[in-house]
Amino acid sequence: MELSLAQLAELVGGSLDGPADRVVSGINGIQEAGRDELTFLANPKYAPALAGCRAGVVLVRPDQDVPPGLAVIRVDDPYLAFAKILTVATQKPYQPMGVHPRAEVAPSAQLGLDVSVHALAYVGENARIGDRSVIHPGVYVGEGARVGDDTVIHPNVTIGHGCLVGNRCIIHSGTVIGADGYGFVPTADGHFKIPQVGVVQIDDDVEIGAGNTIDRAALGRTWIQRGVKTDNMVHVAHNCVIGENTLLVAQVGVSGSTTVGKNVIMGGQTGVAGHLTIGDDVKIAAKSGVHGDLKPGEIVAGIPAIPHRMWLRNVAVGRRLADLFDRVKKLEKRLNALQAKDGVGS
Image 1 (tube, rainbow, N blue to C red):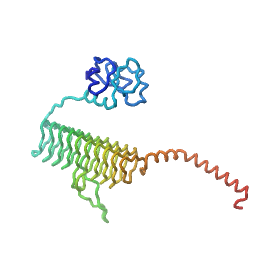
Image 2 (cartoon, one colour):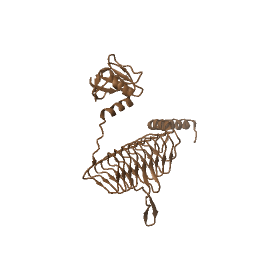
Image 3 (cartoon, rainbow, N blue to C red):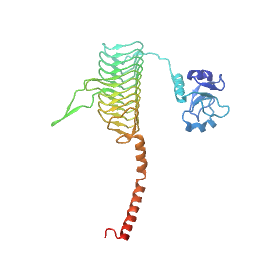
């Protein structure tokens, strides 16, 4: 990357306060950046670091005070501006490699224009890979599965038969899409398996982290809607719906047939019971256990999950329980002493 400060300001729609012709060629942290590097200040807690900052330019908010002589680009969201610049700096022109000789592609599979299918990948019968998509080594694309355009499937991902992946998706290593849902009928002789004959549908612009498991539906579909982003080690059970632009952080588990709305955020290790409805814009704190429906906009925490403000009060009280217990014991002693003095109960 070699861009002038004027070019950077134009790229992010910011206001430059500094030499327009200065060129930066790298990006670094606010304490490490040198004269030829860009950095950013998104969290106000790091504002004191500006005093010793040696960066060529810093992305800051419009109202941020800066030391004299420090070049800055003022933008409404420095973190977003940083992400945009980093994307430009790290993008490489796509160069399709075609099908590697050691890849296995079924005769009936359909490959789009400019695809890349790497060594040891498998593309099954009647599967379809869209234009400019990349299938990395060790990927399994099952019979009749579909992968859209401009999608990247990282090594050792499994996409089960009949499952659908949209356009501009990213699926990270070790993820399994379309394993059987967890469905059994208890009988006197054990647990009778329910055939899982549905699919997983992943819409456009979804990113799935490493080591996810997204189960196929018993009937119909498990549906990951547009713009969803999951962290590593997330599990979505059969027949769930995860609404648009929802974020599932590491080790979230969503049980079967639960519907999650749009723009929901589930903190790490959240567990959600089955057959629930989670409304739009809900926020669930880390390590929460959700056992009932949540209305749109609710913010909850704890096990079982309760309104976040109530949970904070309960935690605050919990920290004082030992002191409160001691106070109650002292009050009991005083009360007993007063009763004995007055002859109460004699």
